[in-house]
Length: 174
Length: 292
Image 1 (cartoon, each protein chain N blue to C red):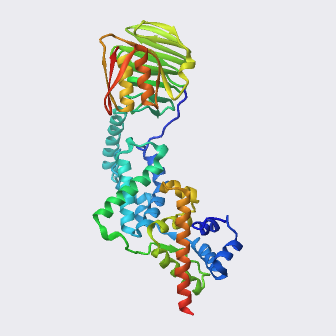
Image 2 (image 1 turned 180 degrees about the vertical axis):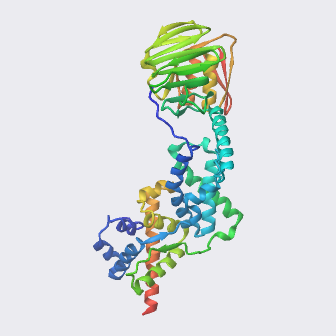
């Protein structure tokens, strides 16, 4: 009989590893959906507090999907309780600034941010998971529990809309 | 022709060429898409300070008490005394592993690995491996012991002592069995000692040592049992699948065979067929095994 050593989440060192590995990713994921800094921060903290509290129940082997499921469930509760969260735009997404950026570049970045905020939630999540987390369509599909085709469609829609929004803006300027 | 609803996504990941995209969308759009792709690669989301581990970890309820730093000598002496008491009480406290309704694999401080079966409970002092390697077990567990100091398992019916080997124990009710799959173990049962080497088993039913076929114990998707009280197997199966099983038979049956760990139906069949029991399902999670 072969056995695999199983690490426990109740061990603070293991817990720290899990936290460091997934907390940022979860936080970013939540901001893509809600564009609300405070809400995403609260949910991220609550997920990990719950995980620590009930550490003996969880299996480290599928901890990632568990963390994201918990995040999604807590968000749903939160949104039900607080309907207005939907649509609040806090401009969570920013760009890494570089000193070489020309004014034109800066303006484009600003417009792109505004346009991203105008995407619907599903499109925005896919677009940002690809751009910020560098995930492939396949990886995004796994995490969102949808087909790869669906992810590609959402990405397509997102790009189409961004192109239109940025296009209108540029024409207006002329 | 590629899919009309995804071609932008395909271009984005490089499976559609610039030329093809230009044909569909025109030069101006192609340039804008390129710009979107380039600029969006510098997008970031700042993670707030509060989510840094150093900040967040302060919120975690401590599972162990931290020691406070004190400055003056008197405090230092008092503190070291408290620490000593703390350490000794910590060492005397126990660590308990409970395996309620699944097979759980744990790694002990000395690197030994234990697989606990449903319903098993394993305890040891926090000082485990510092002073000695002694554990208490009820239920069923499979041990792979790292070489080192004597490793002793006390269970209600007997005790097992080893140096570095692999073996399985089941201690449930009056029933006690030890199966040695590697190395050598010393079993004490009712003040008599028995030595087991690879492929030998001791059972409280025969009160003796007998040969077993180790090949039957190697399949991970099933668990093999040799002459084990049926009540115990029924208990394991009901815990594992979270179902309620009753047996309407007065006989003391002993089970020999494999139990499927993944398929509830197969598991039920394997514990009822050998005794020609009929499985009657009462409701979704309740079954009765009736003697035919």
